[in-house]
Image (cartoon, rainbow, N blue to C red; front, side):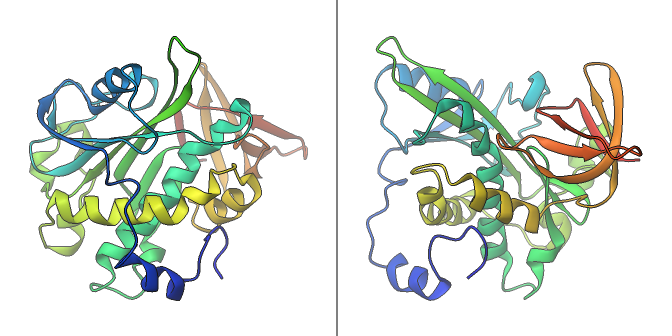
Length: 275
């Protein structure tokens, strides 16, 4: 059984057609929004339950980590946020965006399996929050911890997956850097088709957050990770850090080994590239 998977593929196939969808029960579809993150935060503060999903046709101010903007064209991608309540100490909820990478990887692989049996090898997880398809950015993930006035805590995951953009549709500085499923396959995919795969994948992988199974998430993430064993360069708070990508720390932080053999851990970076 692949690392990190809570069920075998056969078991999943038996249950998908008959089980009740936890993640599909509270689903809000919107047109133009500021961002799905903002909309779901409002719903959380109004008492929205675990598993609530917000999907938008277009975002005016979609964003990624460190307030970077995310270009969200109308109908050209899946722009969604999902409310999660992991079990375990909040300080290890930092595994949630890495877990989300596994969810997206599995959903996209499932959607594209008719195009290639080996599609999974073309999709890599770039720590901490990007999904690459043949080396270009296909998806970004934003994880935000929230708390209401009663002390209820949750994680809101924002997920943006490029589906039907051509290169000329991307902003000039993203051309050649970003990609879409249309770019890769020559076929347009409807957001609802991607959403259905995401809902199934969320359900398949949610047991890994109930409670947080850090070791299983680590192994599964590293099996699909970009740059493992390679020398990487990170920009961290304005300074450059280099080293061999050795693995992940106890909270999901990246671990680099420098030329002297010293291993350092980093919880975030402004930029990550091959050195």
